[in-house]
Amino acid sequence: MVGDAVLHRIEEGLTAAAEVLRDYTPGFIDATRKSGGDPVTEADEKIDEVLRELLPVEGDGWLSEETADNPNRLGRHRVWIVDPLDGTREFIQGIPEWCVAIALVEDGVAIAGGILNPVMDQRIVGSVATGVTLNGAPAAIRPLDRIEGVEVLASRSEVRRGEWDHFQDGPITVRPMGSVAYKMGLVAAGLADATWTLTPKNEWDVAAGAALIAAAGGVVTYPDGSTPTFNNPDPLIPGLIAIPPGIQAAVKGLIS
Image 1 (cartoon, helix red, strand yellow):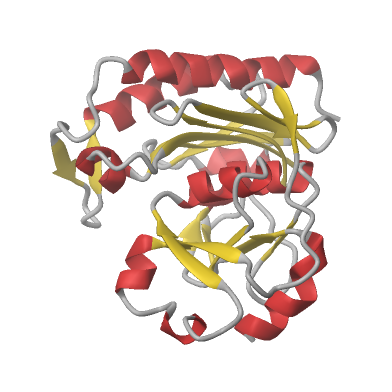
Image 2 (cartoon, rainbow, N blue to C red):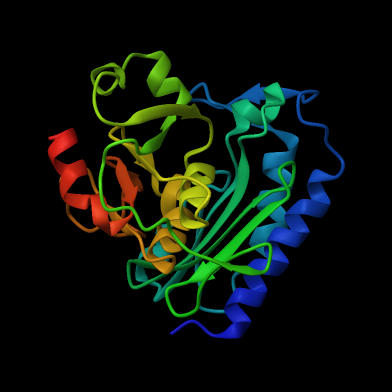
């Protein structure tokens, strides 16, 4: 069960990240390349440092995109899974589709999370025990019961590569967008219909969103319909579907 102290810590983490981000102007950001070619900025690294000092208490594990992985996390009951800045490319380009993403995982289940997009003034926080809030007000997933006309938020890079072409003549509308964590946060807050990615992602990309979708009354699965787990030895997962429960069967038929 998630207590108020955990949610307060997530809120504190998002506030601390926002303070770091005050020193940077999206669209006017210097970046370097990591070994895999992905961009990283000073802001990514500073937020990672701040959250690593603030969030874990004694006994907690830690998994972050910007911290060297420590296998000790695998034996921990609770693990913080963090993307200090999901959507770094959008951050660099000045596109307001990025966020700070914080998740708390307990025995492999994402139970609480927080997502902050300061440019859009959106702070989405919640847990499976308490539900979800958007800027402090209660929020929930949209109660959809049919796939026709549903707007699905899709990875802009996946759309550009043609991975969504086969959906273009179907019953859904595809809307390209940046950060996967941010897309999931919008769905959890009732600001968008649905989102999914059939391309492998890392746990830090989706753990916060998975917690918020579940807390908001939605359904989160791997592309094959199975239930995702977190804090795995290999943090790469096969993709993720985040949708209202009323369209689960229709989405399964659409992507199979």
